[in-house]
Image 1: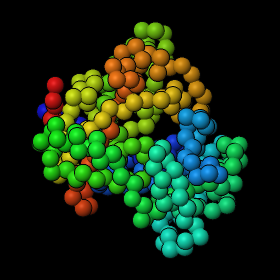
Image 2: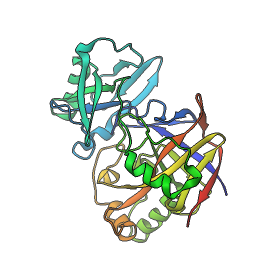
Image 3: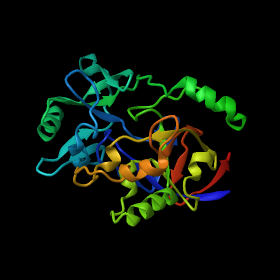
Length: 290
């Protein structure tokens, strides 16, 4: 079955504004520069829109060798993208969910910028090049055992600061079904940005991603290994940071899972050759397992 890649997005700083791409390098760690930076509190624990919805108002760009960060009422912040991290004085341990990993502190100016916006002491960190954060090996091995067609996938997938897996895949038709249900309740439609995907599919049946084993684009293969359980972030307007009850209230009515949680989208792991690129408009073959 052939479908299309209709969107590619990265979020350079975890839980901050994303960047729509036409083309991206892709590998085991996901799309290049996705969730490479993260905001942490004084104890090194990650901060997200869950507790700080104002992070949605932070815009990011990658320009002329810099991560450019802007927000209403704040001066522009420019962070060099590629600096050799050979100074142990800026290396620190940080925590994202249950994982403790090495990171590089981006300095006092960045800390002051984010602290002023969020109203709490915090630091901006970048994933250390020697960081070894690995997606759940047990879950991946279990999934691969049940899907022999993907048996040659690596068991260990090292990635940066995404929640649990290198790639999040969503489907335009699934969003359309959700928006139909919102419209029936007199609620406004929501955009795909509420779900913060990396790869968006089109020409695909609503929620067929739930039953997809592989999405293949040339030599790039994405194995959809785990449904994405949602928190309150989809209720956060990604332009203003305002939070409401939708769309999670409506999603709960038809996407609640017997094992718990409300799902939208699929977490994926990647097998791709060195230097692989993926583009909006690429055709993809999908393998379904109904």
